[in-house]
Amino acid sequence: MKLLASLLTAAILAAAPAFPAFSAGEAPAAPAQPKAAKADLAKGEASYTAVCAACHAADGNSTVPIQPKLAGQHPEYLVKQLLEFKDDKRKDPVMKGFASMLSEPDMKNIAAWLHAQKPKDGFAKDKDLVAMGERIYRGGIQERNIAACAGCHSPNGAGIPAQYPRLAGQHADYTTTQLTAFRDGKRGNSIQMTQVAAKLNDREIKAVADYIAGLR
Image 1 (cartoon, rainbow, N blue to C red):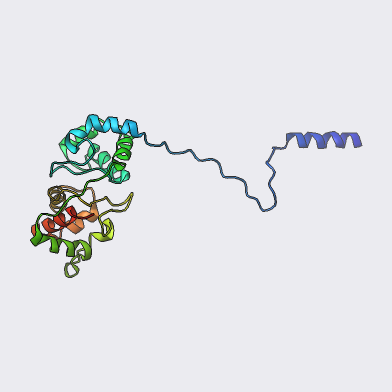
Image 2 (cartoon, helix red, strand yellow):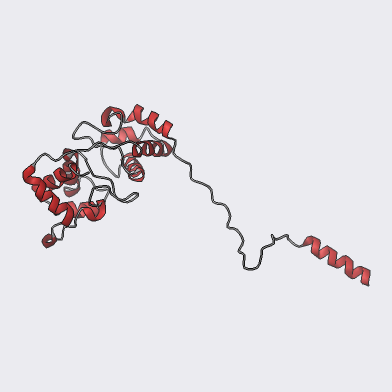
């Protein structure tokens, strides 16, 4: 009987699953999470040069007032816009054509490369309007429930990574076009911007855009 009991005990132990030993109070280690693939800057530069540089300049600092500067922009914002051009959430037939040429990894590589480029300063042009633009950008228009731009895009126009784009130094003509498009319903990929721009008149839009162009 003793021999049978010993054999049964050995069989049970051999069949039991093995568990790692932990010290008292020590929790088991969490399973390793897969690491997100890092952007390839060399591939990003190559793709940017092939697809984007003709309009946005070799270093992302467009010299054409109606085409935005992209250097230094938050990569998450750039990828979001490219995907939305591709999917027609942001409608622009020219940009849709270029975005459709890119895979999502291409977009991430380009966005990372652009973020690493040094943005060039811009400047305000209309001295009569820039004071109004500063008031709206920094304080909004309280009596009309217009929020201050600085609340989302920061006082110096640096924006907030992964949430709100960098604006500092952007061409006033481009910013005016985009604010007008938000206001008039031609650009609909940001509810917040549509709600803000809907309350601005042409002069106020131009003033804000001119002030943003001179931000550092």
